[in-house]
Every structure is written in structure tokens, then in C-alpha cells.
Length: 182
Image (cartoon, rainbow, N blue to C red):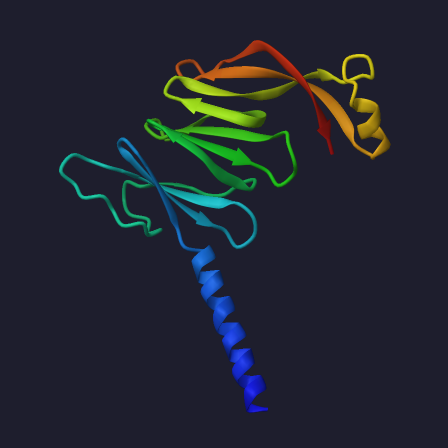
């Protein structure tokens, strides 16, 4: 019986260490900002943004809200996707693609873009490239569509697009593809 109690104690101890490790904040630094991401109790992430100043030390990677910080509370299962200069780029949702794309301007302290996207994603200093639904897939324009429908899935046409950070406008490119939908 003592062995069973000891084994249970080891298992519970391991679980509590795993939970503590999973809930540790993760920090992302870019230029003048430190973004501290903390998993929520359900799905998604809360984000705490601390502005870095000249001569000030970088704050510890702890989710501790102070005066002047920007706290972005999880709304619809947001996850960190990228940080470019003063823009925080978030993935949103719990379902397969397409997923939500949310961009916060940390300098303005407001959301500046919401839309949908599919991977792959390319982020650079001037914008973000991703795929976006551009039409319905048919057997004529998507050879895989019939097979996906037979499996209970749908299909959509997607176009590769570019979102410019200067004006937050989506500009379609010329590349297209067909993708399954759940």
C-alpha cells in the first residue's frame, strides 16, 4: 500500500510540475516592446505589453501588470504569431484554417486589423504575406474537391495576399491554390 501512495505522489508531483511549466509566461522582445504571453485557463493567451525605455532595464518575464502597461485579454482564443516593430500579430481561433488574424498597434494601443488567413505566413518589416479565401472550389477549378467532399469536407479557392503595415490594406497576388475546409 505504501508503494501505491508513493507512486501516486510521484504522478501528482509530475503533473503539478508539468502544469506549472505550461503556465509559465513566454516573452517576446522587439525594439521598444516586451510582450509577455500567458496561457489562459481554457484556450488562448493573455498578453501584457511593457514599453522599454532608454537606460531602463528589461523587465523580468513575469505577468505582473503595472501602471502604463497594456494588457490585452484573451477574447477569442488568441495566440502569438509575431511581433514586428510596434505591431503585435495574433492568430485567433480553435478550428482548422482559415483562422483569425488580429493585429494590434502597440504604440496606438489599439487593434488595427482583423481578418482571416491561412498558412504559410511570411512576416517582414513592411508587411505580412498569407493565403486568403477568394472563391468557391468546383470540380472544374479544383481537382481535389470531389475527393474532399467524399470525405465530408468542403473546398475553397485561396489567393496569396500581402497586408502592408503602412496602410493595413490587403493586396491580392497572382498565386492561387485549392484548400480543404472542415
